[in-house]
Image (cartoon, rainbow, N blue to C red; front, side, top):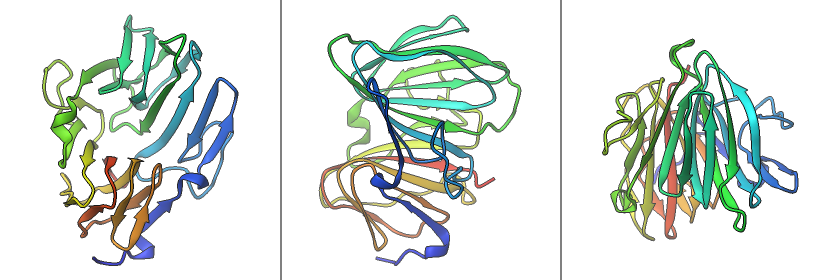
Length: 245
C-alpha cells in the first residue's frame, strides 16, 4: 500500500467540517457554505459544495434561487419533497439521485416529505462547464445491487436522464459513483479522465486509502490515484471525479 503524498491530497475529518444546528436543520459543510467560511476549503477543483443535512419532520428549505450551478441531491434517509419554477413537483427517495442544472436561473423548495420521520440528504454542487444554459431537471433510481463490491456510475457528462438505466447527465466533465463494499474488499478506481481529480466521501463504514484511514463522513481529495482502496468494515462510499480547473 503506497503512502499518500501530503502535497497531492486533502484529508477532511468528519469533525473538522463546518457544523450548524438550527433546530429543524443540522448541517455539516465539507466546503465553505453559508455561515461557514474556511479559506482553505473553498472548493476542490470543480467541486464547490458537499453538504450533509439532517432535516426534521415536515421541515425544509423554502423557495430560494440558484443560477449557474450543477446541483446533485442524494437522499440517505427518508424522502424529500421538491418543487421548482420549471414545473417539477417530485418526491426524491433513498436509492434515487436528483440533478438540476440551474443555468440561467431557477427557484425551488425542498422539504422533508414526512411529518413523522426525519430525513437525511447529501447535496453536492459542481461548477458548470458551460454557463447560461437552459435550466433542466433529472431524477432516477439506482438499484442497490448495481453497486455491491463495485462502482455504480450515477452521474456523468454522457448521461441520459430519460433513459431507464445509466447515469443522469451533468453539465460538467464530472463523474459520480457509488459503491457498497463488504469488509475486506479491495477495489481500484479507474478515472474516466486521467487529468481529473477524485474526492472520496465515506457515507458509512471505514476505508483505508494508501496509508490514510477514513471513518464515517470523512472525505479525502486525491489529485492522482495509484492505490487500491480497502474496506476495513462494511462501507458505503461516494466517489466524485472532477475537473481540476
